[in-house]
Image (cartoon, rainbow, N blue to C red; front, side, top):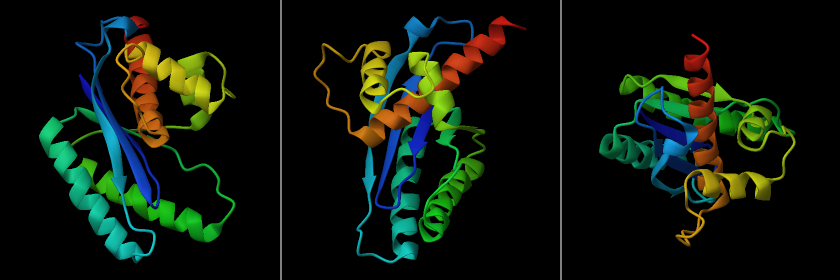
Length: 169
């Protein structure tokens, strides 16, 4: 099973792809495939940023052919304008998933942190460290941006939940 996680942002959208052989696998069987960022110009109009995101993320999805997509839930935002912009970004991501027949799974940040660290209020650096450990990236020296790390954390959260649900069937 190949999972793409997307950390939506209005200027930088992180993505990460992780694979696990099957739902009966162990969490230690996780395999890092790729990660990165889609950068959009802060000075560009929202429609232009949405176009850049659509075209760039479509290339990633077409190349890696994920089985499902994970996205952080939009739960609260201080600014109404920012919330609407982020909603538009999320809409493009969901549209791409729907076009490809890819199921979408949403997780709130607390659930992601809990799945990786066992503590729902973990700090970013703790999540970052667990992503590197679980994907065996610590000795490789691979540098991950915070957006890519968040996207990979979404993948791991989904796999963790799927493995747990499969074991309780």
